[in-house]
Length: 637
Image (cartoon, rainbow, N blue to C red; front, top):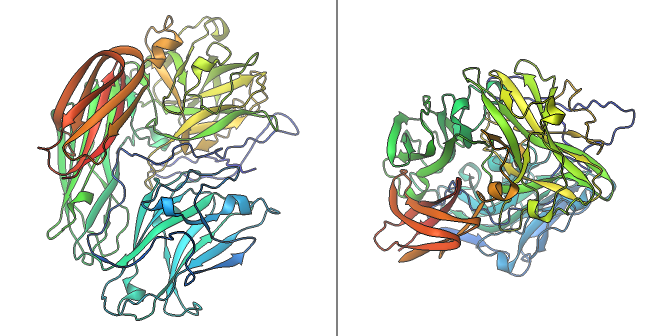
C-alpha cells in the first residue's frame, strides 16, 4: 500500500516535502494517500497539449499488433519488463487506457504497480529500438505519445550508436520527471526530445526507453506512436499557462474560482520551450479579459536556447476588481516559426461572490474516505489561504464531490470539518463542523456528471455559529470525515497546475478513526499535503436553506461534436435543473466569436457555423444557473 506524507516547509515559491506522521494512538491505521484508479480517461484540457513538429518523420513505430521482432526488452532490476498491450493496466492503482492515435492497434507498457507487488521489489527495465539510420540528418528529434503518472520513479531515454549501449547519452523525460508525486500527464501527452547531439549524421542509432520504478511499485508508463524527424529550424512552444497568486503565503496558489473578497494580485504565468534547431528570443504576450472586455496586457521577450524546456515566464500582477469569468490568453511570435499551433495557450479563472474552489474541477482521480476491505478510514479535503489583505467573508457551507465508485453510506454518516492555522505555523486548530448526514445515491457523482453534495454549517455543533468568518492571514483546511461508514466511499480529485517551481500542495489528508473525530489532523503540528486536490469547496452568503438539489444544479456536463470541426460544431449540455444557458465560442485571444442562448432546459444544445472561422484552437464555455463548464474544440478546414 502506497503512502504519501508531506511535511510542508514554508517558502515563497517552492515547497519541500518530507515524510512524517503523528498519531494519537499507539498503532495508527496509516492512510492510503495514493489514488485508487485513474478516472480521467482521455484528457480534454483547457490548455493545448504538447507541441507537434511540422518536419516529416523518417522513422515511425506504432506497435501495430505486437512488439516488432527487431525491437527488444530487458530487465535492469526486479521482476518483469515492458510488454505489449491493448488494454489498460489492471493493477490496484491502474491508469486509464492510453488514448494514443493508434491505440486500437496496441501500445507498450511498463506496469510498475503490478510488478511492485511481487515481494516489494524495485522494478526497472528498458524497451530498445532496432538500428535507425540517421546518416542523412544533421538534426534529430524523437517524438512519442504517452500516459504516465509519477510516484517516486523516473523515466529516461538512452541513445547510443552501440547495440549493447556500451556508451550512451541519457536524456531525462522532463515532462515526466518534473511532475509532483501522484500527478499524471495528459492522455495522451506528446513528448519531443532533441537527440541531435548523439544521433545526428549517424548510420545506426539505438534508442532505449528506460524506466526506474520505486520499491513496492509506482504506476505505469505507456508509450506509443514513436517517430523520428529532423527539427524544424524555428519552433517555439508555449504551454501550461495559469493564474498564480504568490500572495497566498507559502502555498502560492493557482486561481480557479475565488470570492472577490479573497482575490489578491494575480500573475499570468506560462511555460515556454524551444523545439527548434536555433536559439530564439520570442515576443510573448499575455492578456486578461473579463468576458469580452480587455483588462490587462503585457509583452515580454524571452531568450530560449536550443533545447530549452519549460522556461517559466511570469508577468506583472493584476488585481481583479469585479466578479466575472476571466480568460487569460498567451501568444508567442518568433521569426520563421512555421508551426503556429503551439504558439498560443489560454487559461480561465473566475471571480465569484458565492464559491471558493482551489482546483480546476477537471476530474483526475479519487481518494478513499473509507475502504471497506480492508477497513481503512481517512480524512481528505482542500486547503484555502486567506490573503492578509482580505476583509474576510462568511462560510455558510461546503460542497463535496463523491466518486461514482462510491456506495451510499447507509447508517454511516459524513461531515466536513473546518480547521485553521496561522500562516506562520502548521499547527491546526479545530474551528467547527458541517451537519452530519448519510450520503445517499443523489449525493454521488455519475460517470458523466459531477454532483456537489451540500453540507451546511451545523450551528448547534459549532457553538451556536451558523456561519464562520474567515480571518485574513489564515490558512483553512476543509476536510471530509466519516462516522460508522462501512461502504467504499471515495472523493473525486483534480490536479492543479504543476509548473516547477510553482508547485504547491493544495489538498489535505490525514488518518481517521471513522468515529466522527480525527486521529491526528487537529492535534498534529504536521500538515500533510496532496498535489491532486480533493473536490471540496466552500460556499459563502446566506445558504442555510439551500438544499442538495440547488447546489447540484450548478454541475454541467458538456460535449462538442464533431471535434475537430469543419463546417459546424454542436455543443451539447446536461444539467440537473432546467435553466437558461449561454454558450460562447472563444478564440485563443479570449475574444467571443460566437454566442447562443438556449431557453430553460436540462438537456440542450447549440450548433455553431464554423465554416467562416479560421483553422485553429477555440474554447467553448457553457454558463447556466451559476455554474460554468469549459471545453476545447479544434476547427480544421
